[in-house]
Length: 318
Image (cartoon, rainbow, N blue to C red; front, side):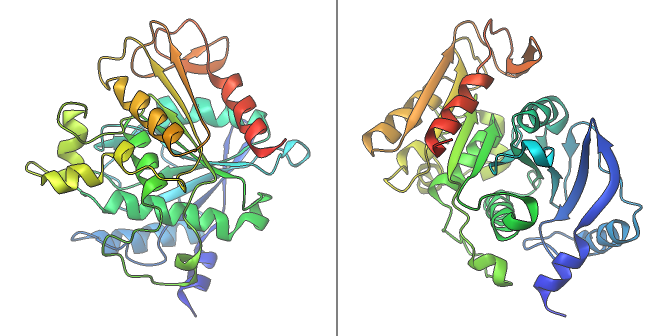
């Protein structure tokens, strides 16, 4: 049996519900993930077995120490489906993946708008670059390769990132076809990993010392990264004409990730003719919140969510 067939065999729908959405969990890698650490092969095998026999339980809340990366799939009701997909990478300073506080409110909102959601549990600390990017590239490729199965248009697949997840998505946006030492393992790796659009929510963009978030930099790059590596992963400096369109949101009072991160990425997109919109929410701080049932950012008096969906629809011609 080929590795592609093995992956398809392991990806089945679990009997778990979130609200009205059935969760389907997909492992990113058919066997041991590339860059695995000691014990990960056994954990991968055990997780695959649990998915196969129906005993796997989707973790609640935020996720720490992810060793077996995966996607949780949440599809809108068939009659509401727009054909648009959003692959979500939550933040956590590259030390955790905050799906509970950031991802789940957004999942419900997007599903209600007819957008299919693919929530990625990617590897971060103790894994350094390029492991998180490998997981992001693989996630986009899996969603695009199985788009028909999910009722998704393969040319309407977006990526959303919160905080450090915004760095993950902006890295994917500028390095989607850069292997960084990765060796392809199956036909999925021939599929494009480029998002068709991105939504960056209070995103970290730069690894430059004067702009970055120190904890995220330490977790991703280690204690003493080279200046060349910092530059390579300062994604505002890597934007070109092929970079996907970007919708950015940041609070003016963000003290965790400097708003200059969003501003520089927005300006780089404009300079390269890439469609972009930057929403600065007055008084907004760092982190998620709900306002009248819609996702927003902490301490903001307005929500960006409806304007984000309108931007997506306008971009895609809906």
